[in-house]
Amino acid sequence: MGSKRDEFTETIKRTMAERVAWRCSFPGCGKNTVGPNSADAKKRINNGTAAHICAAAPNGPRYDPNMSTKERRAITNGVWMCKDHGTLIDSDFTIYSADTLRQWKQEAEYIAAEMLRDPTVEKVAQSTTFLQLGDALMINVRWNLVESNKWIFELVSIVIGSQDRLNQYALEFNNLDDHEKFVVVESQGDARKLISISLKQDNKNKLVLGVADKLPVENPNNIGSDLKLGTDGDLCIENDIKNISGKEAAIQRLSTAMGVVKGEIDASPWIGSKVSSYYTQYTNNLELLSRLIKMEFIRLSLIPMKKNILSGEARSLPFVKRFNQVSINSNTLGHSRLAIHVELEWGDDTGWKGIIPVFVLQET
Image (cartoon, rainbow, N blue to C red):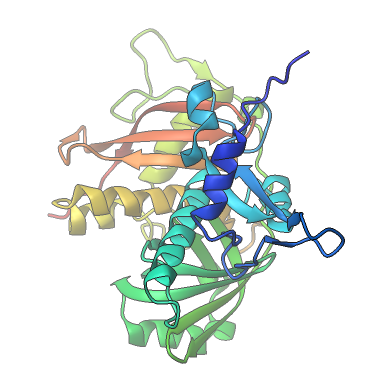
């Protein structure tokens, strides 16, 4: 009986390895994966693996049902790793997203190409990702090192905030409000509570983060009953009041949670999203606006906040495993709502894509 896995051919595996000079693509590793077999002068040892970015078979890590067999077997769907890190990215696949692995693949190939041109000069990859620290810092960074609860990034530029504000955030971290101690990574589709932060300034500015474990995702099918709202955000009473639950309620909650304006609740100013603020500032730059709003979706799905001083912490959108794509095609508002195109993975490993209308408070 033949395998139902869409495996790479040996030619593709070899080419994948050669394109990164047979070195592991995991940030901070770079381990050489090929060498002589000391027991046989005619043989070599290969300690690398051609890891699938999107799984070769259903129920595998990062499986994409929309991909064809040809696409799953293509070199573009693979990343060369040492065997240890190849195992890690699959066993911890909720942490390592497809977008992140594609970025690491690109970075490893870039470094290999640059080293061919000039092997004496240290090379760094060019691709960057957004990283958010607390409420007011958005930074362009490059991955530098990944360990279980330690992330290191190279700072490239400040998108929102300033270098002085970043320095202050790091220096005063231990005294910050707990609601400010979090990090969001765009490419990873991940957000964590921050345990520690430090800035290292040598030949490059490095940001060293100690992060908490990722919180488990919940099943959207278990969401209880809620009243259905209309497209204008009011109760839908055209055909009597209707109750919704499960994924239908989850989709509605995406809209309502993102529509709460951060700071409008005096007793809990940390509650809500920054969609309205971002819309006001970046409405004429839809690409940037889309990226910033994606960061808000990720934050609300993974960072717990207290509803008030006396309550326990809870996440607004705990039933989403990953936001794969967020885009805005027009800045036109309908019923004071912005149409946001979303592609995501639910907590039950199924996918969904559609338009989420999000309330925007316009400045007068």
